Image (cartoon, rainbow, N blue to C red; front, side):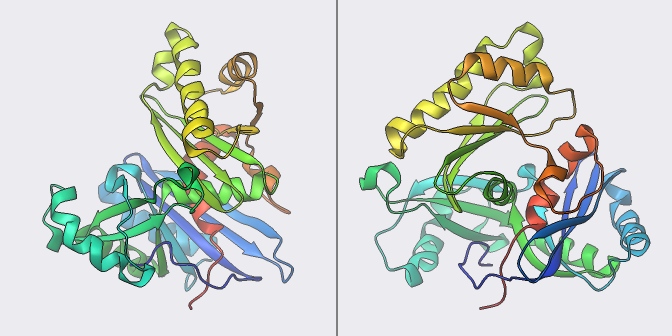
Length: 305
């Protein structure tokens, strides 16, 4: 499964993004005109138990008129491993084979029961001193289950993707070319910060504090975010982060946004999903929070090589 293989970009067409989570699932469709301008044609979160998700997805596909469409499933972060490691000194075409041999030393699961892919960092990351890569590992059983769910719902599974790359797609649409752009998502007990320049993802870091911890104040959260930005500048070596986008959350984000603006030197903005598109439905912040990954997945622009 070559999740990150560079392929020819589409200039037109549409893709459905799906993310299954513990509270329900999100469905979004992005369509592009001939000139490539994206429109968010539908976006919804369906709250339901995991046992009901297959049947409820089929209902949503039918009601939204999505039957027969190609889809990308964005894996929930709880369903895959995301590991930073030294890139083996082998040609690109031999990289997956080299990591296949190392897999048993990198994960606890049986290597025969997983699939994996590799996201290599750009050559100028870490000031060119070290070649690094992210390894993504997911169980074969989960991938087969996802394929079955989509087939039963009337969708064609085209891609399997991950949250980090879905956020990269959002950042590519929201930030100016050449700008070091960070995206920050805060959930109840943890957070995620990614930094990219254009389409190149340079850094992914977990934030050990979430929205629940903010009841005691914002100092620790600001310190965690600032450490990540400092690490990007000093270790990744791509200069200062020029813009930080706070992603929608299930709770009101205004207090967090205000704290970030006061505590950090970078330009701070809140990402509003509908504002990224030529056309989009109105979405409250809670719905946006649940649908971020699905929308980012649907923004993927690749076609078969």
